[in-house]
Length: 425
Image 1 (spheres, rainbow, N blue to C red):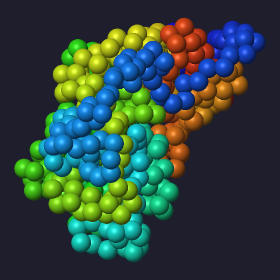
Image 2: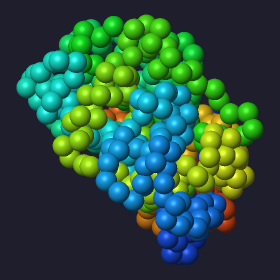
Image 3: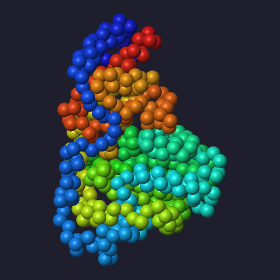
């Protein structure tokens, strides 16, 4: 039954029935967490063999005779640069391999823009008002990085094929707009992959700011749920065709491939930007953990090894995504009280409640023992103008816990929707 078609008496009756069910959940004193996109323990177990790989003295010697135990080679060892370059679709010689977090590399890149500037322009901190385009719903930590530096966040709506490029093309005419955040494949949180047309339009941008940068966070480049995953056009190749390759700063990591607390990350840049960033980074560190880079390179060997490994991940988390999506369809979409995009990969499901119901839904979940990502977190400054978006992270709970959490989540959405309908009745 569609809730919007019920009369007031039916709404009141439905609310009373669901309130009793909700109170029964509260009596269970649940403690379930779906707030962040963390791999489950079974996923972490997939990479344990890497930690058990025997290493003698000679085993620490990398290509080119590099001793992974010693100083030097800030850009990373050749094997790791080649592996991460394959993930990003960029030449190995333009890759800097970092530590456990690609977010750290992104933060550092923005910091360099603030302190040193890009393309021969003044540092951003000396240019007055600085603005960044933020496709939303989007990744909250991206928004927080730029907000930390006092950069103004400008929302750009996410469409079914990526950011609203009509809006983006208009906004970059303003020279104060210095960049745009992008999660191009299985976007966080919607799970949308940018279309070929969108990628080409991004590459063809002609921003007024010479120092404009595209923060291309390809975090889910290899995170397909099915044998046939989404395909993403190579932005760097398209930018080379347009002569705009200096705009691109591409990032990835193995955080959700091996260990979030012990993986490696990478940044891919144009030839000119690679030399510029490498020089600046040389003042802050001698090198990253080359032993861990070597461990990863030898464990995977090449992209075929990565793909085979990711199929194991998919086998573990695909049933969890099915639980989430099937339950959303059955309990909410069928009642006309929500919508979502069913992703083919990534780590999240982005659900849109009826307008004005997201914050109340999250509150009800919390009061019954299920922690969700705060409502509005996927928007700049944590403010969702429609109060409707909630990010669901299915991977960390067990399948049994997830089923319980989703039953409660759907119940809370229904209760919040009923409250709003009764107010208007």
